[in-house]
Length: 68
Ligand code: FES
Image (cartoon, rainbow, N blue to C red; front, side, top):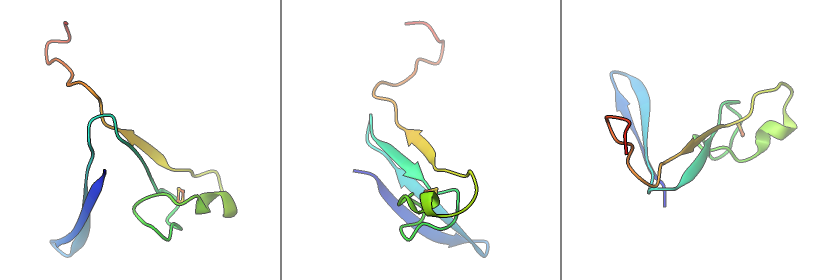
């Protein structure tokens, strides 16, 4: 399950989200979510075309050389 932590750093809030392999989250870009930083679907009720950012953790690590 995704976990997140928000800390203040140099006067700015910084959020770190940790995902399990294969896990996926939707992050709010419209700034209207009541569950920020996660999207709660509120963007569908506000004007504009901004939707969430979808972030997905890979199930397998990507090889550095690009070969398998
Ligand atoms: S609620 Fe903000 S992008 Fe979905």
